[in-house]
Length: 383
Image (cartoon, rainbow, N blue to C red; front, top):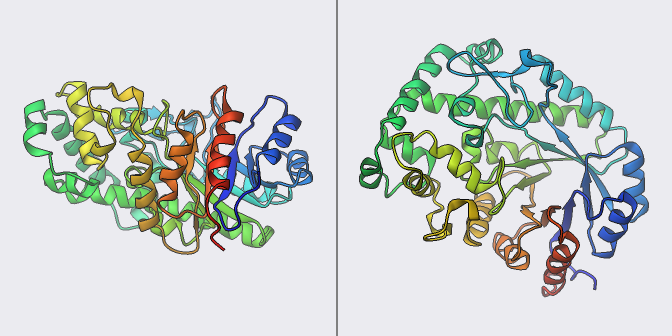
């Protein structure tokens, strides 16, 4: 079955089989157009030989176990790692990223997707999320006319106030919250908290701009994309859709309504809830879902670790479309191990994305991707 003319492009991140050659063949059989992998020059050539467009994925700020000096620093001055990553402000990591991009630009891939192009998320826990206070962040903040010590003090006040909220206080005070700015207004938060969020966005946007410049100089035909958090979470980790859209060709929100781990909505909700230390876990989860505007996607009476409903996909995809500006194409990436993968695909398409991507997970990945492919192929022609 072939894809309908004008239907959204089909992307795949990862492999459908352990054997790479079989995986590429299966991807081509299922109509995948863009195949994303960690890659190598040989892998890129093999993907292209299969008739697929090869994309590379690169972890932006990855550190080795013996590189503690590159890590983020908590409000207590402790070094913290997140997603095997260090501080996005560190000049060594920024230069390493550009050097790796420059090297990969010569591999002949169609494009490069940045992963982990952010600061720590709530999934990593409150102490790691509320970073970074290292001297490199201090220097960059100073360049922007900010005092990192002042920002850190504002974060401590926010942390302490959140930690004191009881379940009754959450029920009384948080029912109308729908976005991070609402929470900050409710708390009468200090100016420093907003500046901390803006500082994170500045650092990440500037890093992406640097990568864009390297590609323009070394491989101007190569496209640049990024895996980003969903719109409800992105402002918390330094990802500003509007700003990123001016440097990126592809923006891929990770709309993981199922699964456990970073970027998975349930895990991030639970992580953000750890800031509400005085309230029971169930009350924390409900408060955070209201705060993120995802209460409609919760499963009444079900534990949060069972994931969110399909509404989460349509809500977050629609927000992504509304916030995205510039030339970037919208390509949401979904969990391939979703038992309702066709319905999840339909939910993503409510935002009229240019493509839909799938993260190859689970034992039924071939069958699930075929379900998604068949759904996309059955769409009426848009031409």
